[in-house]
Image (cartoon, rainbow, N blue to C red; front, side, top):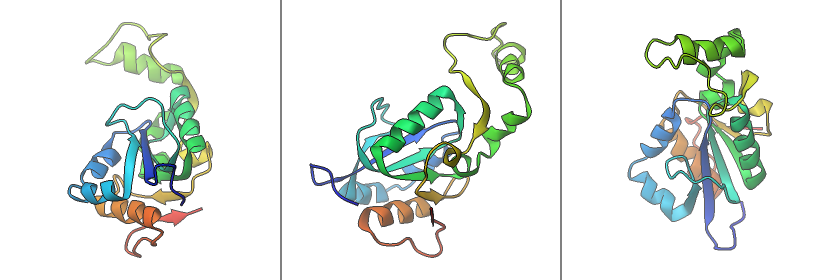
Length: 181
């Protein structure tokens, strides 16, 4: 992995359709975050609410692709990242968000905005809601993925082994599952 013009590696993370558990595991690196800061800069993350993703060495993607906005963010990160990593089972396999695939988009929106007991709006919003894709997809069905960190969510140890290994060129330990395409 080559360094950018500042001499430091760069990491960007995005959160698509998922629960944010993978980002919580990333934060659970605890003191390893200091070690990560020595290796690289986190240049974009939903935690920092960065809207424009800059060029980066590693892009970590949490969640499935459920709507046009997810797809746009994913394609943008793929274009900016030298290595794109599927972070967690939703990104890798679709998992819980794909349960939506057994219903039509109309049924999903009706249940979410009209029928739901807690926050019923009485009608489906038309402007604020990104257009749903016909079905929820794992990210590898939309873009090329270079590596996967499985788990729901992946453990902080698995995330550290994979990310630090990618940054330093050292392979992840065998006890940590990291697959390469």
